[in-house]
Amino acid sequence: MNDKVIGILGGMGPEATADLFIKIIKATKVNSDQDHFRVIIDNNPKIPDRTKYILGLGENPVQALIQTGRNLEKSGVDIACIPCITAHYFIEEVQSNLKIPILNCLEQTNKYIKQNYPNIKTIGVLSTTGTINIKLFEKYIKNINLIYPDKNIQKYNVMEAIYGEKGIKSGNIDKYPLNLLLQASEQLIKNGAEILISGCTEINLVLKTSHISIPLLDPMQILADDIIKS
Image 1: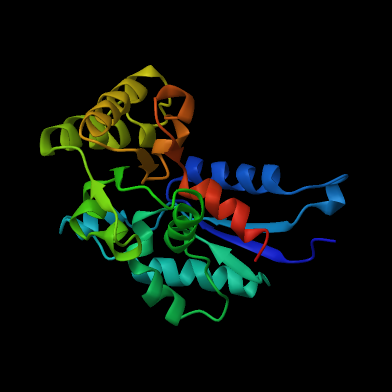
Image 2: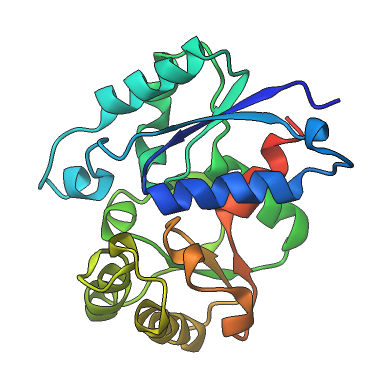
């Protein structure tokens, strides 16, 4: 019986939050509804944008993250997770203000890479510019060459696919953001990436392993698989 209560500190963005919930459901082996984990979601899209703050263009999201986490605590969750990779920049400060543990998707992704790709030398990362600037993946993935799109591709392809008027955060998960991300992926593959990481939760709503010639790791899938085992 799966009696653990899982909390999702969500809203960053709402569709990525829903996607993680679906991943948790599908990762759980069940024979009936009652076999599923109870999952409590605080879908709080009012949390200030993490990338804008990191780039010096917006409000600090930490207090909103903490308050949302406390809502989950009050609801009785046993373990929580955050469906926003850039928000993991703040995870230590948020965790220090909460009693419930937060499973860190970047730590879990690092473990997954070591277990499944022990000989990998170069990984391409598709992520927000904020995540790149704070070297968030470098904090957790050591002794591997991490490469990113060049500045123009990052701005006009990756960030446009995520934040653009016809981007994923505007509710579009069609060919427009996909084609932008495919161009960025092709550049990383050309530059030697042996695997890619979907380093923003919006990206994995559009870009799938079947679209590219090398493996694509989804930290949110890794997180979903791990949180049901924790």
